[in-house]
Image 1 (cartoon, rainbow, N blue to C red):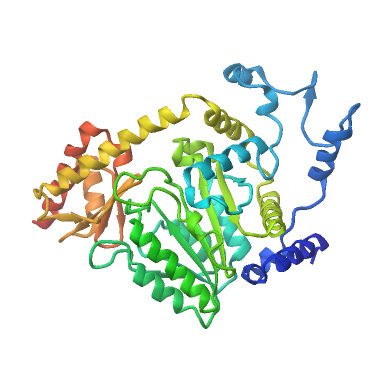
Image 2: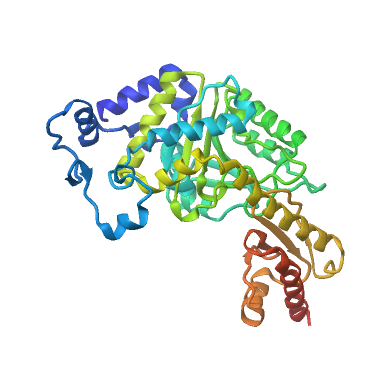
Length: 430
């Protein structure tokens, strides 16, 4: 094993032996190499005459570039676009995102967290979690209403045993009892990775205050029973809380909860700031030990360096400029209100009862999506029928569930959308 990896492992072990036990075999081997990038960073500080280190081209003290590109980006300094970004991400962006996170998550007050490391959006962040902590056969716990890519990232690539529990309880709330039972069932293994995605894709549900408290208690009880836990909050749709739910990430409540619990936050500008194609995400760790946090950051940087080298510099610059813009919060609120109005109209239409003979809906209070529960027809057959006969696109999830993204349907079109879904269902019932 590389001596740098051994050094990081020692720092983690000294900071919290339970977190060291959570590392996968790959996670233990990961390190950030002191190679070209480290030498280039040193040269950037000291090479005042000639800096012939890193593989970019310079012209007139400016990164070499084409006018065909720069002419369309004239508001930006070439140095903020063309050079490689650090594997950890643009430092100013990492600081700005951390400040945003602390402001929007009061439960983090007084707790230690790492500086967010920039990822190539959230899927990449989740992949890093998988690299660091998942060995083949490890248990990944998550509700059964889930984003299908989790199976690929954790199951196919890392060999995790994906274990689910019913998302909803009999009252239509989050099934905290199911979570607790699934957690405690891992006692013999002594380790599990828990993935919590709120607002949830595909259901659009976020726990209430009482449910959030029960989730935290379930995690704490599992830790007290001797189970080491990586608890990952996938906060892709953070901030889009429309109704009676918690209005911050569970990461703040889980951070520092118990020595056997490592809280990891994966989030990003992708959906929060409506920049899906920019691919800017973040991964953040919580621990009371500074050296442990630095070691996990280094291992994360090693994963990034070894797989993609670094994330897009222009995208990071664009997001940073947005966060610094005085109109940022006002513009965010305007977009929030548009999505909230759409969600409220969906509920009003479905609560009218005029479609209840064909479908009902799962409770939702946040995010981009909601799910219909079909009474009589198969979800995928209906999906294809809607495409072929009505030009309507939806997502089938299992035999009974149809996901509808109200986020991409104008307010004035929502009534027609559900009327067409209803008509399609009635066609198939005949």
